[in-house]
Image 1 (cartoon, rainbow, N blue to C red):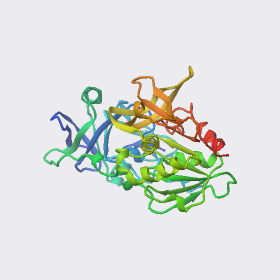
Image 2: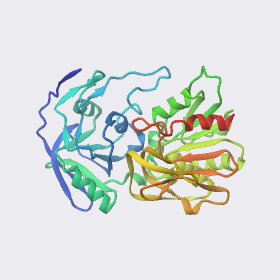
Image 3: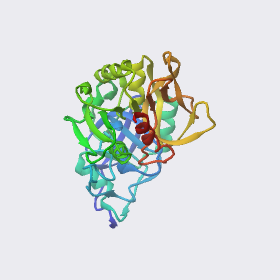
Length: 366
């Protein structure tokens, strides 16, 4: 599908940061005011995936790549597991989208909508014409901060999404099975904001997956392994999840694997602490070192909080660290079948360096 974007985007607006800095631009998508936490993503591609990533809930995302929207947005297709194809969830999860240049033409064989049309239909505002280089540099210098995207002549207050339980907001409401035809291990996936490709990767590795709500008592189920997925916000807000995972950790015999927020939840359940990064890791090229080896993996990431590796209790140790800032990128237990990573091995969008970790988890169960 190819064609020009049929819209007259003439409404002016501003992205206003909590420090008073204002970035002018032209609105696209839904024409309304929103507030949230302003963060930046360094990915060159993958906006349909990262805009629908539940880990971005409550955030106004800045794309550092200058041209966005040129390959449009795919249609609503689903795979054999009833998971969305080309998206990470059922809807756009970001509160707002900030870009430098919106492509005037959409051209890709899978495209069914332009970025503008998709965001407008979804009720999500965007702003283009912003100096995203200057904006990203300000966030790097000052740290992630609250902001609001407002049309000229309108105003709203600032909102800190990290003060709410965002995991509860994006979690599934009722348990759901995936991969029923598989003969492999039964895995409980605690949904604190699961990306579709995490579930797909587990099924493709041979698991039968029961996806349950963030506060579900999974001990009422018969299962072989526990999977902790990604999700938005402060991990300490998902207090019920942490308590349930602690029971599994204390049991000592339940294989556990975590990704992203799951790394933080496992650490909290083990007795370690977490903290907020200055501006987080959001992109597709974060280098991670495997502790005790010369290996470095290029990873896809989306998180604003991290595990404090110095607080890991006896029996736990760091598995991966970030080559850029030294922050924790994974933990593992020395003898219990429990480990987690801060990055995304399912890698959509992003590199595939660590996709084999799903099979390693199933091997750990077996």
